Image (cartoon, rainbow, N blue to C red; front, side):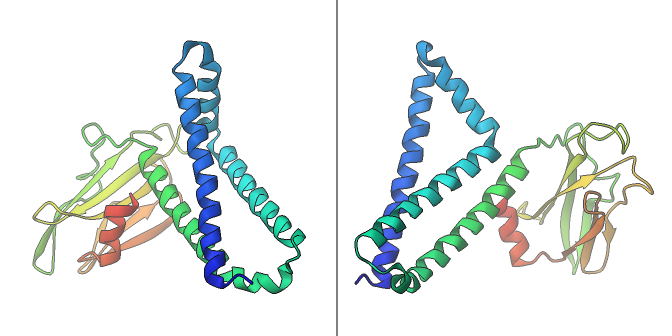
Length: 229
């Protein structure tokens, strides 16, 4: 009977088949969209990306159907799925963790890049108590830039102002990057940064709570600034 290692190898092969199919499908749609007679495929590709939430659900459903079919085939070949399933658990746990971690990375990336920050027009650094600050005899540059929305009041239809807070050291190295929502006309109003001896506190109006950045920034903050945004 197959071993735990064998099931893990099979899971890699099966996942490679699924990813290959997705890549081939997208590549084919892109290629056909370049031909005038096949503009419909370009519109279809646009809809797939525009309705990305439903597309993601469809892909997940396809993956579940694929592995369900594999399990059914495995069972009909005379194998006892109940006895073999414990051997599959390590591979299942591994891929679930990989999926959740990938979803976190993709979610953070999309959140960071779906809105454009204009530091030239919407520089809130002075207004929100940013600038050059010193912690433990080290100087840091704190900059806050916005996306320039939510100036019509808390009951307006426009999107809230999404701000980007960045902290750099004297060498210009990015140490911290945080995104949070500002509602300018909210009550009692958006608060500026609170600078402590070893921390910076900023207010997120979407969550209606304060967040703390330890100073000097932790290794986790540095890694998040470089790889999660």
